[in-house]
Image 1 (spheres, rainbow, N blue to C red):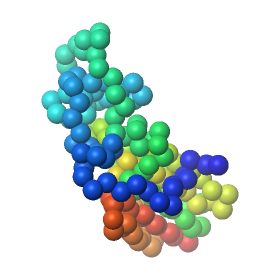
Image 2: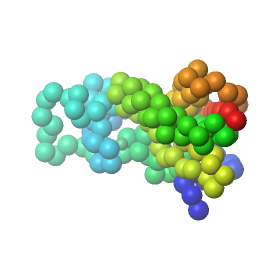
Image 3: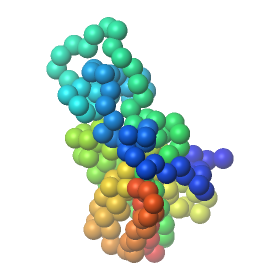
Length: 167
Ligand SMILES: [Zn+2]
């Protein structure tokens, strides 16, 4: 089974404070994510490279919301890319996505691609941490390469399915 499995019934969270993926969750400072190395400091997650001070040896550890989503296979958005044009320009399109995501992640470390999967028919599925990033990727690809672009939001929770196709 691939990584793209999304449970049919996803748990819904009435309060953000109950949601383990909530980006505004507070942690003791500093807290380091053992998975990706991001550091929670000054009330937000930052990349280690952006932290000037030396961290204490006994620093608190906790999975950041992005790594937790990856571990639990709980994306905030899915981008589905299809079509003949995609097959012919795959490298170009994937590079574009990489650049777009790197720009966003540099400033907002919790905005990331969780996994990417290519199906037998050439369809590419990209799972993102947020509906914003999924939409952002779809818009960037559509503005660069044209095609058909569609977003569907799940009403009860923050989740977007972004579809882009060009033949
Ligand atoms: Zn992490």
